[in-house]
Length: 342
Ligand code: ADP
Ligand code: MG
Image 1 (cartoon, rainbow, N blue to C red):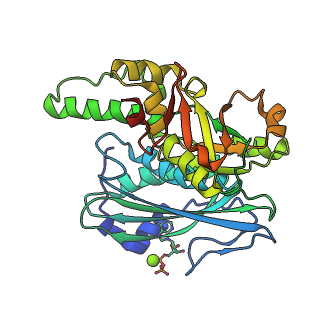
Image 2 (image 1 turned 90 degrees about the vertical axis):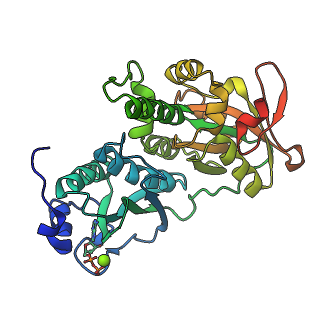
Image 3 (image 1 turned 90 degrees about the horizontal axis):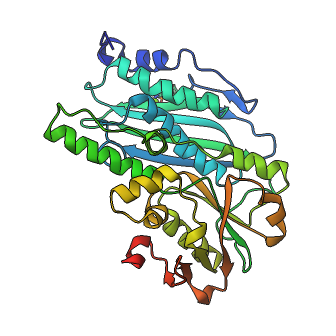
């Protein structure tokens, strides 16, 4: 970055105009976008879903190792993931920022580059937001809006006895990426001359810094006429999410350790840190994969999809939420799944 433009030189309105000057509209449901008191949307008789997330510097992200472009991308992705978790298709986002003069216009341009990249990739429109000052730290609030046919949205409370418990992709990688970045940050603060050692860790780093939302899985459901009985996205960790589904569905569940999908790179890095990869898969957050339950009759429809793993099944509520380990032992799952393995 060569030049630095002060936000004050543009002013609030100038800054908003600048950041949204190339903003495009992709969806017919976007009737009025950025520039008025409110956006106007017309979803033509479909159900509309709305979700919002607040991200605070130092709590949810660390600018020491998070590039602003990636942060902009991820801020949108985490909200789109919540829309997909309802079996809906995201159509619009609003992005609100709290900034101090520590940030230049160029820094915000980088952040918006990520926002626009996510909007383009997921075919959503940026239709508004708010811009305000923050005394300390960068604050980001994104709201996403999506649509779904009135009989197709999927909640967390529909899992029933005998249903298959499934997850998309693999688990634990983002958490291991976070441990890697925290380790490198510590080394850097102690001895800034040491080059970061990120060799061979591209997968877990990408999962932390540039996650994707599982649009492909929702499209796969649509194409194959699959309607999960319950679904949510995995932001806090599998343990915590399966407990939510079971509680809200008034059900129990049995998961199998040997069925949990963990990528080779995650497993290797976990071993390097002397951590149990299963504990990382159960408790590591921010994977933004989908956890869902399916009626057994749908098994044939998903069995060939390598992006979907069947990891267990739903039981009676009285049986609790348990995992069967590789050695055949049964452990109760708690919100911090690793405790069960100590
Ligand atoms: P108001 O005072 O009515 O809230 P603003 O001046 O804050 O309006 O915003 C003007 C327009 O710019 C609105 O359409 C708003 O949604 C949009 N906007 C404001 N901040 C942002 C931002 N950070 N990103 C995208 N759009 C924004
Ligand atoms: Mg405003």
